[in-house]
Image (tube, rainbow, N blue to C red; front, side):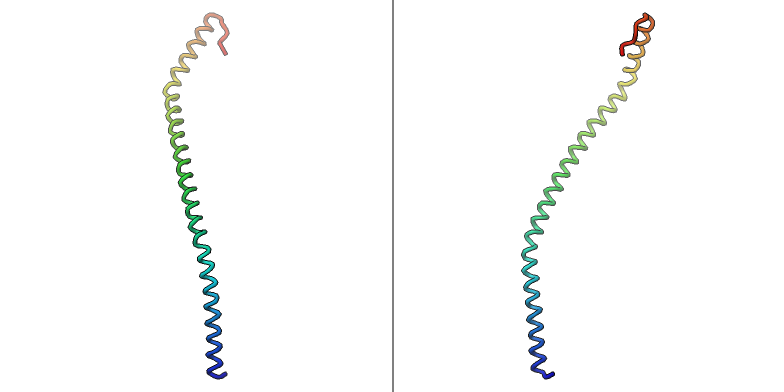
Length: 97
């Protein structure tokens, strides 16, 4: 193969590579805005999720407080029920059910 043919072949191959590069560059330009939109949607979703988790955490804190309050009140509730049941049994009444 002569030098001129090799030069033409190299120019053709370079042209093919440039064309492929231009196609890829075009695709990347199309993808970039979509990626930015996806990032924004993901950020919004994460913010919403963080808010929901915070709400659940706050509600669980309230439930925990109520459970501890019940733990503190339960002995008095049981004592009162036993006293009523004992008193009504002593009178011959049926316990309230």
